[in-house]
Image (cartoon, rainbow, N blue to C red; front, side, top):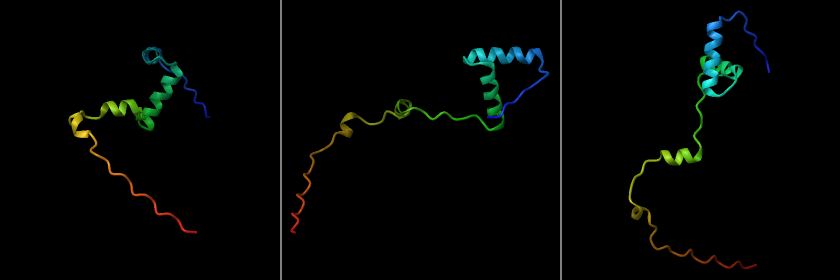
Amino acid sequence: MPQLIVRQIEEKVVKKLKARAGQHGVSMEEEHRRILRAALVGASRKKPSFKEYLLSMPNVGEDKDFVRGPQQMAPEPLARVC
């Protein structure tokens, strides 16, 4: 993977990058990658987990609305004649 070296960065910028990385619990290098990625490619949208997806569903209807009625038995398959 390519590397990028950035020189002559103001001390103020380095301090802010370090603080921001600390807030996100990542290294300064990872924070730098995230900033560049968001600025140039766009922020990645995290796909919600299955649990998050289910929790986001609206609470509609009553339990009785979803009760299954009597079920019909499937017809017996025809016997094969060989």
